[in-house]
Image (tube, rainbow, N blue to C red; front, top):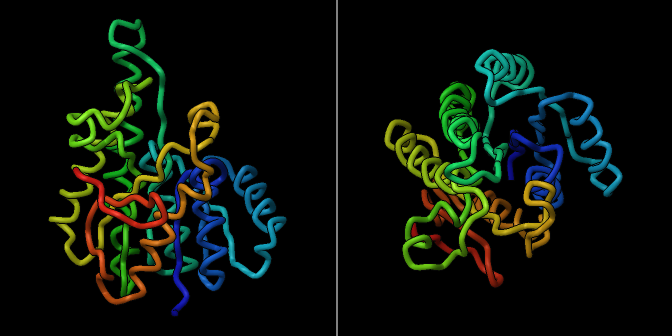
Length: 249
């Protein structure tokens, strides 16, 4: 297995941190770039990873605010100067605000959520394309949610949400990813649903351990080792009941 360079946004805590931990445990020879809003939080996360025994793995903190074009451009420049490429981009950073239609801040909350979870994904992905093109096996794994599945929403497979803007943003994220796949067929585009995990993101109300949620990403990375497109290819994936399976769009 050749060494890969993997960039994860929102990597200092929650699902992002769990993704880095799970991947580094399974693939210790890869290099992991932790996208964080502040470098001190990134350095603290790296120390936590090393305290977990991941001492032989290369970790690096990269400062990035995904809602800022100059910040994204700066991150791209730094990575290009040092690493020349990205093999796997994992856009994970997102927000979820608990507001309801009729609340005074509802419009602003929707705008913030869609900007962070959808528009920023498109800007981030397009900005990182030159680095992805420099890879022999470019892959983007967008962290989505089963709540973004229209099929799940219309067949009552998910309960009412605490954040309508978040749900809408994950459906839009899936569509954005599909559109990017049409424009950039040379990159493998995949959406991943970690499931309802216990993190600060949801007030520790989830049912799954974050490492269990990260398993879907680990399996998608492992699958790509099977060939240029892997066995699975583009799609919307989750890891539940001990197996990787497709999520209905």
